[in-house]
Every structure is written in structure tokens, then in C-alpha cells.
Image (tube, rainbow, N blue to C red; front, side, top):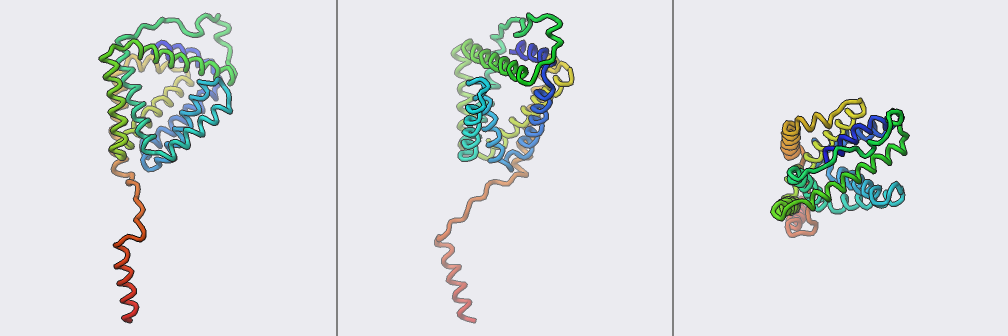
Length: 268
């Protein structure tokens, strides 16, 4: 999969600037919100994440059809708002599954060194792509990453597949049982990943080669992400208040207070 990302890094230098600049800034801003205040803004954040996930999935499934992508984005946003605990648990399970699959598939990596657009001549490589062409190339690479992930999942042994599945199931149960802890952890992990992805996109926009740096310093980058996730989790548990439950009206506790108030009024 790293070769696909390297190929994307080379081709992205010819993208329209808006295709890299706007998503990069948006990911960094959204990542900071999720990392430091995700639990304080739980429903809005889940709506944004659900809409983004649904819209991207719609574009990958049905090409660049805005109608289908819009319906998918709306469905994802509604799901995140109506069922926040389940949405958080699913998101945590997806993040854990993705990380476990990447780690488990590392031993089975067997990718070619060719880029998806490596057969072009030098004059065509210097040509700047339009916004529509840049989005089409991005979709092609995204589908390649999805295909590579499916292939890596099929290459796992029975034991490795069981471990990956257990990780996903365990995180799903954790999200459903310990909602507050899982929510802080989920938003911290998501925020750290979005900040990392946004900064990488902006570095590609500036003409740097961040994918090579990440490959060389993979362990260091992983420790930085884990440290950010740990700090964000603790910060949100301390500063973000837990959701308040509405007091039940008409309960037995409210009646004595009402009688006492009436008695004191009559006594005066």
C-alpha cells in the first residue's frame, strides 16, 4: 500500500491547487476540533464525520454522481446524530480494524513498484491537471487502496484474521459499554489521524515528499500519534462534561417539596 501512496504523492504534484489545499486545511481544522473538543461537540462532530464518510463512500461506489453522494452523506449525518453511542462505537471499531489490518498485513506486503500513471512521458507529467481530472485521479487511487486492503485481508492467515476480528469486536463492545471513555478515545484518535493526514496533504501541496519520511520514520510517527491520542483522551475526559440527564417529572420526590411550599404559603 505504501507504493500506492508514493505514486499518489508523485502525481498529486500536478493537481489543481484547490484539490489539495482546501481538503488539507479542512482536515487539520476538523482534526483539531475532534482532538481537543470532540466530546464537547459530540453530535455535530458525528454528523460531520458521518456526512463525510457517507459522501466519500457514495463517490467511490457510484463514480462522481452528486445525487447519490448527497443522499449517502445525509444518511451518514442523520445516523451520527440519532444514534451517537452506536456511531462512536462503530467509528472506534473501524479505526481499530484499520490499524490492526495495516499491522497484520505488513508481513504479507508484495506490491509492484509501478505507479498507476507511470507510463506517461515527461511533457505530460509537467501538465497541470484540472479540478475534474484531479478528482478523477484521486478516486482512482482511493479505489486502488480499497482493492489493496481487500487483498491484504484475504492474505491473512486464520490466526491473524481472528486477531483482527477480535480487535474490532472488542472495540465495538467497549464503545457500547463505556460510552464516555470510548468517545474521548475515538475522537482523540480520529483527530490525531485527521491532523496527520491534513498536514501530509499540505506538505504534498508544497512539493515535499512526506510519504518517504513517514516510511523512514514510521515508528516515531506512530509514537507521536499515540501520544496525541493519549493526551486528547485525558484532556476531553477532564474538560468535557458528561451529558446531563433530564430529571423525571411527576416523580415521588417532587411531591413532598410541592406540599411543603403550599404549607409554608398557607402558614403565612
